[in-house]
Image (cartoon, rainbow, N blue to C red; front, side, top):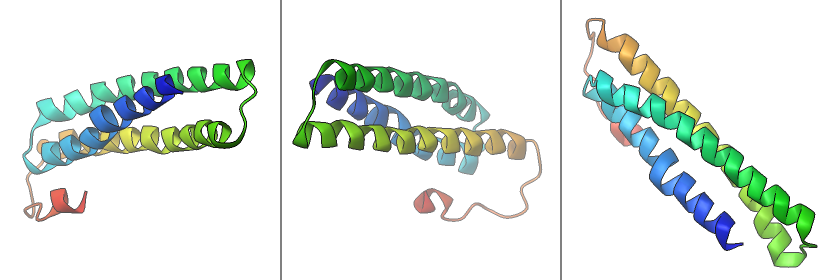
Length: 116
């Protein structure tokens, strides 16, 4: 169970949440290099999701999980899908930031970072 807990923490804390914040910063600060870094980081988020799925599948196959342990593993699998999707959305925002950096800005991006 500890291996799942560590993987979820790595996926969430160091990847998905920061990807959202960094993609918004890339958009508001017109930072194409940061946007590219966010897009590259999405591949790592995807890799971690696959790794976590494999660990959870092995646990389900090799152990007869019951009660709290079973709920923990199934809930983890559900959460990971959402976290991976957050990484995908951050990558999409970063891609749009790159596109918009090449165009004239019509209006300032007021409070976009706060909305994220």
